[in-house]
Every structure is written in structure tokens, then in C-alpha cells.
Amino acid sequence: MERIHSSHYYTFFQSDKERCFYIDLGQKLVRLSFCQLLALRQKVWSINIEDHFDEDANPHGFEIISLCNREHLFILNTLEILDLKELLTGAFFLLDIAAQTPSLTPRA
Image 1: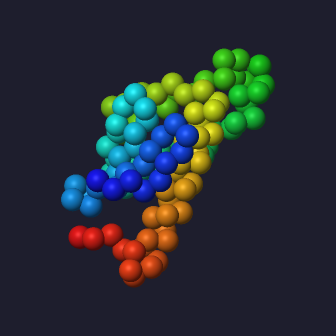
Image 2: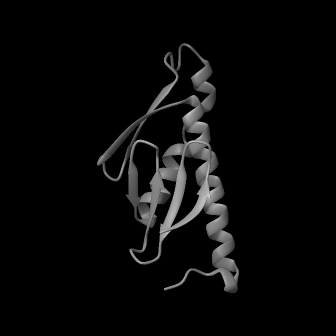
């Protein structure tokens, strides 16, 4: 398992041997296929952060995210959501660079 990217709260790993990804969310290590990773990115990017500062839209400032067909459930605050967005942005950026650079392509 190779560490791809880290943020303040989370760490993103890639496992070439198992052909999957892992996100260490502090309290839990979650295994994700590429499709599940794309679904997570879509869920996280669809969260409207501005609602976290609006008492009527989100009075508590938390988001509930379910992963991997409801196998995992997380309750994240505003800072954790922003950090997860940063982690996924950095991870996908680095994965894109690795895919485009022949010397950095993942080993089979």
C-alpha cells in the first residue's frame, strides 16, 4: 500500500496488489474500488459548504456521508468536509499525473 496524498485529517492510499484505494479517516480505514471512489468524490463535491454557515439550512454544521452502499457511515463537521474535499482533489490530481507520465505509471 502506497501513500498517495495526505491532508490534515485524512490519508489516501493506493494498493496496486489489491487494485483498490484506501482512505484513512482517522477512526476507520475504508477500502474503495475506483467506482466507489468516484461516487465518494461526487458526494463530497455536491455538499454546499455555504449551508454550513446558514442556521436555517444546516443548524448543526454536520454532514452525514454513507460510503460503499451504506457499509460505512460518517458524520463530518465543516472542517472535516473541507479537508476531505482537499484530500480528494489532491489525490485525483496526483493519480492523473501518474497516469499521464510513463515513468510514474503504477506498477502491475
